[in-house]
Image (cartoon, rainbow, N blue to C red):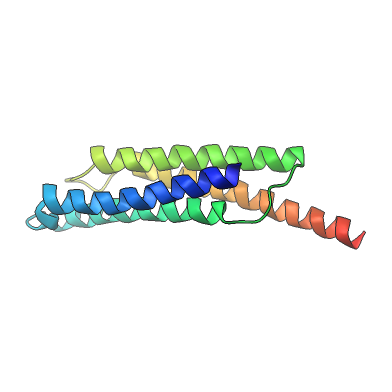
Length: 138
């Protein structure tokens, strides 16, 4: 179930990435006339949406879900963190841009959250793999 959720949400984020590209093109004349830093931050925010979408797609395309309670807890916690980060990066794109300063607290928090979530999810995957090796080597 988590895999499908990640896969479909990842596809939705990639579509949103395409739409935010159109938004920048039509609303901001493809960023022409913006100061260099604002332009770079806009592009970074745009690319972050793609990155988060690809993370979701990768997690949704992975192996089988484990049914061990601890592994599931790690995955659920990672999933929650990644979804929160995804919402926060979208929020950041629309509220913190264009910017006249480099500080973007919502984007920074989103990046830390996605790192935390992917780390939890990856740890769960490693534990699951170790457990499956132990049971198959028996």
